[in-house]
Length: 101
Image 1 (cartoon, rainbow, N blue to C red):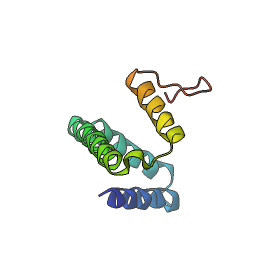
Image 2 (spheres, rainbow, N blue to C red):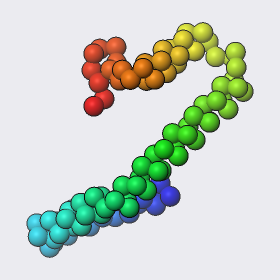
Image 3 (cartoon, rainbow, N blue to C red):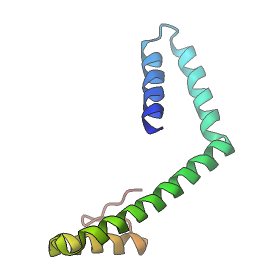
Image 4 (cartoon, rainbow, N blue to C red):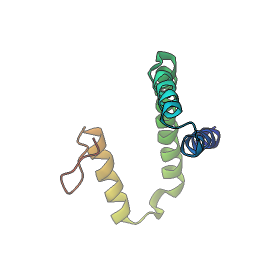
């Protein structure tokens, strides 16, 4: 599904960049894209997909952790624990004081 979406986005971008219709067609496409993005059904679906992917990532993390176990060097394990604690505490800034917002 992700590859299809990427393909369609690339196709749309190629059309917009390669079209001879000019600015008017570009504005028309952008208006349509905004309407789709602001559609409540699309937003709900995107949020549901994001939640499911987070759950899947958590399950995958635990499955890998159970299998890898003590085979990970302590320095790597400590760094992962630090990052997980930082994300669960709500602090999203990195070591340099910047954030991803």
